Picture (cartoon, helix red, strand yellow):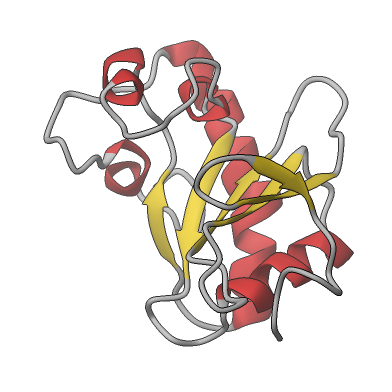
Length: 152
């Protein structure tokens, strides 16, 4: 286990079936991300949360649709989570993260009818966390505006 509720298999999973082993220097970042972001959120939700992606090797990242070549996933600093288990919505989880946690970046990904399709959140164990909140509409990143973008 990487943290209380995150397994190594969840950290390395990828839909491409490619090898995706974090380098030793990434493990400290992955553990900090899981302990500082995921575990407090998991405690607040009070139930499991689906993890879509945490670590991405350079190869996995390069073959992931629209992934940035400078993605924080490649450093073990980012995770994508989803409400598919039905305990809290992506919007609720993102709002809670925004109001309660120290994070680097929070992105409400591809909203449909005001509901985020998934949440991207990153955390820097070393360095300054920007607390930057964005919406990705599928084409471009926009500054987050709670009165315009999402429905709760």
